[in-house]
Length: 337
Ligand SMILES: NC(=O)c1ccc[n+]([C@@H]2O[C@H](COP(=O)([O-])OP(=O)(O)OC[C@H]3O[C@@H](n4cnc5c(N)ncnc54)[C@H](OP(=O)(O)O)[C@@H]3O)[C@@H](O)[C@H]2O)c1
Image (cartoon, rainbow, N blue to C red; front, side, top):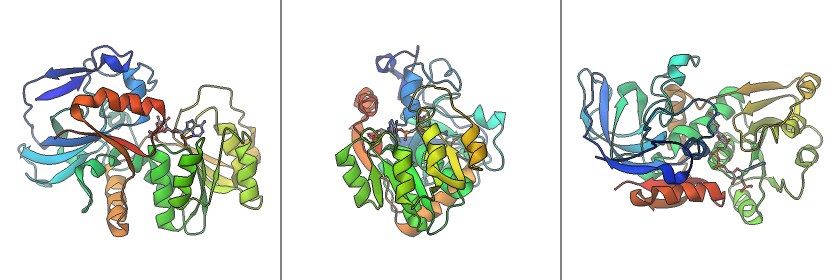
């Protein structure tokens, strides 16, 4: 099989295409012919050697997100069969309950090998059936960004019809958050630095879009748009650079789902959390049961992931460069065959 590996992190050019023996599934594992993968911001900072959570394993096969069909099963597999169309779970060993160290140590494309390969071995409990009606390209976008957005809205946010959610920018997580929020019947306020992207966010149902560069105090604008009440939930992908304003954009007793680190480190004052009675919760993607619940919602609502661009396997590095440019709207996908 052909796969990309990351011998020494440092830059996108470090990615190296190699030939490796085809793998064989062990007990309770499945072999997947990967048909498409998708990129996340984490994948970019992993190749650049800037991912703080953990050092990638040596000669890592990158990318957490991929979809394909099962071509072989190992002994004892009963839940899945050859021919099933599946996506891999971001964490191969987090099926439900609280996250633990073993789950974190099973994160694909980081702690363990990922999906930027023609063939991948997954745990039987580390794969889910794709929602019907989704192509492999669409299915490949789900494991990280979509499950993270679902976790933020449904598990942490407990979002219900009529609530207001604030999403930041037009990257993968934020667009899924917008789509799920609309499905639930919530109001969405988005931020974006691009007028063209703002227009697309509005067309997708965002009630208002604030340009966070032209309006640096976008938290005040969010308050104005909610008649001074603030958002019930902030889907916080910006990190240290946006968190202080997210505290102020949330309503009294509101929730902040702390997800991202797009903006650099800075001091964060905890006082607004206290004064505004905020519930601030970090999260790391989500488990298999969340993924399956999300897929049921995707099927029931005919939701389609937003794909910015599909590039061929041979142009994987170009896909990373496109992600780095931040010119994308939604997900960047690599078609494997
Ligand atoms: N905790 C977790 O489990 C988890 C899971 C997934 C992702 N993440 C993190 O969440 C973040 C987003 O990931 P992603 O894959 O969705 O990223 P992405 O697709 O690369 O998102 C990039 C977009 O973010 C927006 N952005 C950049 N700086 C911003 C700022 N200061 N304020 C508001 N928006 C800003 C820009 O939107 P505009 O062009 O519209 O301005 C940009 O196009 C990353 O830090 C990632 O590591 C964490």
